[in-house]
Image 1 (cartoon, rainbow, N blue to C red):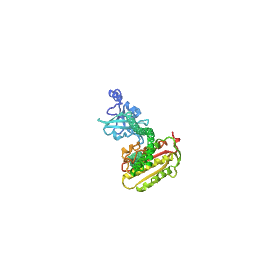
Image 2 (cartoon, rainbow, N blue to C red):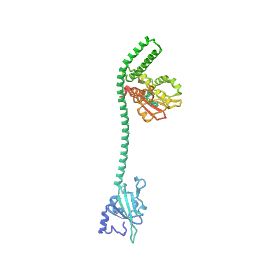
Image 3 (tube, protein in one colour):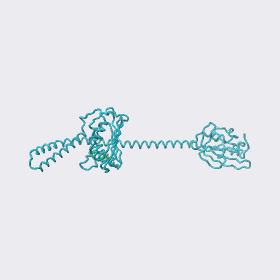
Length: 395
Ligand SMILES: Nc1ncnc2c1ncn2[C@@H]1O[C@H](COP(=O)(O)OP(=O)(O)OP(=O)(O)O)[C@@H](O)[C@H]1O
Ligand SMILES: [Mg+2]
């Protein structure tokens, strides 16, 4: 139904204004004061899905989306909106087919003698909005990908460090084998001669004491060579099903007197059932002795006259895990980064060779295992060891 309006658009089809009205690219509705649509243009038909005849006379409410519709943060069209002159962005309107379109809305009154007519201009921004939404999704996808990349990058850096580390260890192994061989021969020669002289020299206690010194120094050096040899030894490796708890206890026993003298207590939190692992028990003990002596030294360096070593074991995904921690002096970033390097030590000359951790690292690598450390200066250190139950089953 049609009521006369000031513009009388539909009633003057020949009017040149009607052509302008109809060909406008924005949807235009002329709205009566009672909220009914007086006239609609062609673009309004496209936007709303209603024919002009259907729109004319219909209440504007047909374009108001029901509350259940997803509006993507847009405001729904309302009667109040249409009675307040101005420009409104991101307004949701309901089409005949039930879809929602998004528009920028411009409302302006048209003064007339007869009616207070309102003209509403709708610019469809649905495409723009969906592109914006897509952009936002793409952006968060990109951000996600970026984080993934950063993570991978950090992983790669970690791998690279491990590679550098094992490369160094391999080079050191060859070097150590050579040095051990070269030094041992003359050393044994010296020891033999010194012993021979010792047995014939009766001339006073000084010469005898000097010779004793020579021999004891030779023994010390031979000990170091033995250490290096153990480091590179590839043959005579006795692998067997090894009880990790027994290996830990064995190594703690060796240090128990030193622990007692320094007020060090050992706290154990052992897994109830820990499967045996396929390993060389002596080498495994060597690892725990190295960690325990380091903990001993660190606790002593902290200078509190006492300390605690805590050892936790667990079985997780076919790996035995051992957490070996102490409340000693801890390490700063620089020391932590270098702790596993062969010959790196912060201990005074004669006290540490800087081989304990690199040796342990080598032993665990051969078992396809790993050792990592967490530490902060003044806050102790925590080593985590992981060893597969059977390294032969690993790739
Ligand atoms: N539990 C720990 N707390 C604090 N620092 C540690 C600990 N374990 C190792 N470190 C640091 O790492 C360095 C290297 O340790 P590593 O066992 O390889 O050599 P070392 O103990 O110095 O000598 P060696 O073991 O050959 O007698 C140590 O000198 C020390 O600075
Ligand atoms: Mg050590």
